[in-house]
Structure formats: structure tokens, C-alpha cells
Length: 255
Image (cartoon, rainbow, N blue to C red; front, side, top):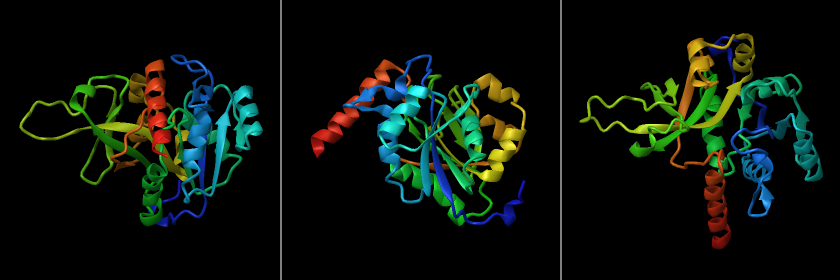
């Protein structure tokens, strides 16, 4: 792996949207309509507004998703059906699409904004030692106990200490106004970090929490966490889909 001080500002930044059709809780969700347009298309449109991306494509193992993309002029690459995470799917695409930095954009995050990508990418342009970045946003205390909402805590340099489905930190000292933070599942990786991820075995905490990013932390690869005030809703359930649909209906009404 390249030493951090040898890393240079990225010249080519590729955005990849992993899009798996076989979702357990909400089957076929990436092609479900939101105000008349499939969720995946909504994601692609919003991410396309980021000027920092050199190229953008969908990565899928679904022939149905591939056909939709081709019919709608969305760049798409087929990948293996055996991948256990979006990161693994991006590692496969990396072999065919050379770049300095790869941005992992979830296909079930239709509320994503170009500003989210700016926050992910900017550290690579200004701090040559950065290897992986992700995002957090303030979380209401009553939502911290929800295991479907991933929480993150970071050190004073903004590097992730841990990600968990449990509420972290534990509030033993209730006099400290320390907030909870929700982790937004968007990432950017330097190519060298992805190559290392591919070579590393799955780790105990990663397998326990079912959180792929813990593989980086358990092997000592730092993850820089930027904060955004703009929350998103990752669509996993019918209720999520209804909430996101209301969001787009409000946007349409404001035009």
C-alpha cells in the first residue's frame, strides 16, 4: 500500500452506485417508483449534479437493472452476484475502471445531495494522507436505540472510533451534552485503501455488527468522518419509501 505521505491529490474520481435488486425487506426496491421515477434514477440524477466526479456509473448483478439503465442512458456495469456488500461490488468495478478515488453511493439513498459528495471528496483534495471518508449527521436521542440506525463516534481529529447498531456513547455521565450521531452510509476510498480492503479477511466486529466499514477500523485503516446537517432516509421498508415519496412531493410542489 502506498505510504500516506506519497499520496497525491486525486485527478480521477469515480462515483459508483451499487444497485442490488434482491433486497430482503423491500424486494426490488431500487426500481420502485418515487413520484413516477424509479429510486435508482432519482439517485443517479441527484449525484450527477456533483462537479467533482469524473465519471459515474451503476454497478449491479441484476439484468433487469442493467436493462433499465441502458434504456435510460445511465452508464452501468454488471458485477458478480456473490458480493456480500457494496464495497465488494466496487472492488470488482475498480479492476475495470482506473481511478484515484472511488465514491460509494447507495442505490437506496434517493435524498442524497451533491453537497454530501463534496464533503466526502474534499478531504482527498486537501489532505494527502486521507484513505477513507464517510459522513455523520446529528441524531435525536429517541432514535439512538433503533438498531436499523447505525451510530458513529469519532476522535478529536474527526476519525471514526467505532460504528455500532447500539447507542454509542453510553450516557453514564448525563451532565455532558454530547450528541448522538447517525452514520450516513456513503463512502469515498482511495484506490490503495480498496485494494487493502480486498486483501484483508473479514473481522470479528464486522461480522458481529454486520457493518462492512469495521473491517477498515479493525485492521488499523483510519476513516475520516465529515459532518453534514442534511440527513437522508435510506429506503429499507415501505414506511421509508412513503417518507421519501413525501419528500419528493414537497420538492415538486415548491417548483
